[in-house]
Length: 139
Image (cartoon, rainbow, N blue to C red; front, side, top):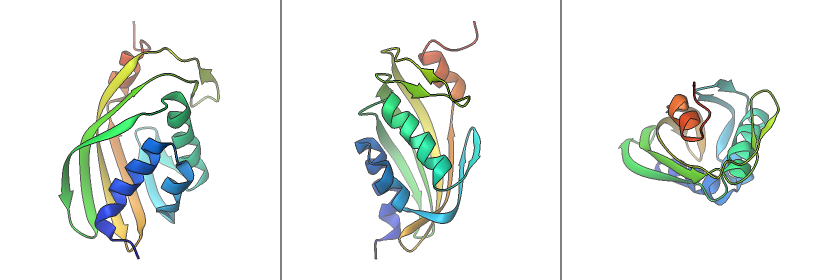
């Protein structure tokens, strides 16, 4: 059995490698998975979101700056950094062509953990800043 404290690190590393299936294997089937876009169903909604970021931002990474918590609950803070080098899936199903622009977006993710699974994932990031860095903000 994995150590619960390593699950967030393993999850972020898998996403950074583009290994969406490995990231999904760490999430409980009934997990409460929330993003700024709302609650996503596990696994299909989470898979679609992660695939969108992996294909749109190949080689992106999570820079972790602070971690708080214990075996059951953790908060991870940092910056997500990448370059928009591939098509990114949009919520309406369209694809945003690569802009070539780099992004650096601060995030906080709150995790609840049980054994070797993430049972809750609540992520918060500044979507306006993200879109603005891509040149997609309000004009």
